[in-house]
Length: 283
Ligand SMILES: Cc1cc2nc3c(=O)[nH]c(=O)nc-3n(C[C@H](O)[C@H](O)[C@H](O)COP(=O)(O)OP(=O)(O)OC[C@H]3O[C@@H](n4cnc5c(N)ncnc54)[C@H](O)[C@@H]3O)c2cc1C
Ligand code: FES
Image 1 (cartoon, rainbow, N blue to C red):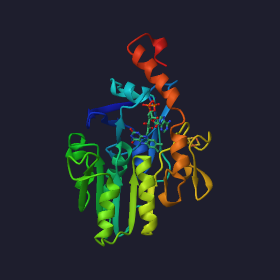
Image 2 (image 1 turned 45 degrees about the horizontal axis):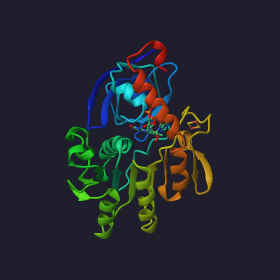
Image 3 (image 1 turned 90 degrees about the vertical axis):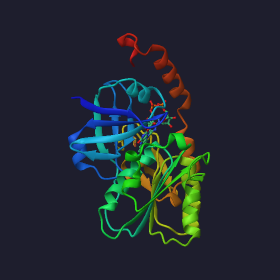
Image 4 (image 1 turned 90 degrees about the horizontal axis):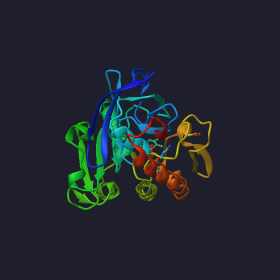
């Protein structure tokens, strides 16, 4: 069975948008959940957050990073498999004032999905903060969570648009200005999540953050996505992927996530050298 890609376009210089027909996944999706994508039968499975579902299609924001994501952007027309939705989604309920923060591709997808779902529930006041590297790298309006948030902030790493810095600075400003916050959702870069965990601990704010870990099967069998929460080992794919960021052992999580850098570099170099080549090279 193959899953047809119906739309693919660039969001900035490195992230792109993909729409794929996957009605069974779309029907069961809750914000915060992800899928495992397979570009070919023998290929690796890569986890991707879902940004939205419409008419039996799921949409994703994907970063051109290594072999599989580049192969995909280089003109793939269908996936061999789209497995999911996986992991626990958020509870779609009244939280009060919710802040949704993100500073990288997967986080922006989750930010959009969470803001959309919670905006439909009466009693939620939604503030979204999205961080991009610079003004030129901000996604087009229709891919931003601004359309569902009551208040939307953009910060940039280089200060070329909005506040300079990450969402942590903007969130701290809200807290300093005595904005009452009931809950924070977030995702994106691991070091920023580590930084925000201190801010949320000091201010005792409940939260759930997507802890991106290396995943292999996505179904709790391989143990690749081990993560330590309050000293206890959990599996991000089945117990998460969202956890209270105050309880995550971030140093350990960051170390594990960087574990396969050497192998990934070799796979990418091999792909770049052989793309468009014979079938034997397409591993
Ligand atoms: C729950 C979850 C949701 C994610 N959502 C998104 C998303 O919405 N958009 C997006 O662009 N990326 C997302 N990612 C990360 C994405 O899976 C990796 O970028 C992708 O696997 C890269 O594969 P590659 O072959 O292109 O690059 P590779 O060269 O294989 O890897 C590049 C980098 O991607 C990460 N990575 C690689 N393989 C995996 C893996 N099996 N599991 C987790 N991380 C990996 C590592 O940081 C690695 O250094 C998510 C990861 C998780 C765990
Ligand atoms: S990815 Fe294998 S146990 Fe989570």
